[in-house]
Length: 195
Image (cartoon, rainbow, N blue to C red; front, side):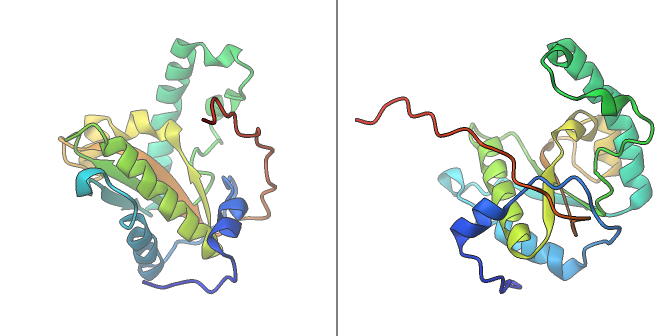
């Protein structure tokens, strides 16, 4: 595994991580992706199940088709849930120029079979490891939850080599940031009890 020499400790890396929504047009090499996957599989896993499997998408045309397929499906989910009235900015999904992957050259989809109650949690723990490793390597990441309805369509799963009995759980774009991403404010921890 290629270990970065960033000078950041783990807490500094956690504080430095951002959801990056602007990328340079560069594709990550296999060694870099391999390092990110190595970090991902070091995540905690319930009963040592290690349910995760990965799909890496770097084909620009495929990313574009997936974005175009995902936008109307996600917009429909937003409408059904009534979220467009909640003050969120979902107008971009109607724009033909909007790329849900923010022009990143690499999409890593963490998938799994639904074999136990903690499979999704395990995959999201792997996703966080991957994102922190990417941050420590000077890369940007962003979870693209809006792509899940399209990723889990039978025809899209077939095109991406995701077996029918697997589900896409955590889609993450990774790449070289196109600029600085400022920190967003966070609420203080809500402590419900301290006994």
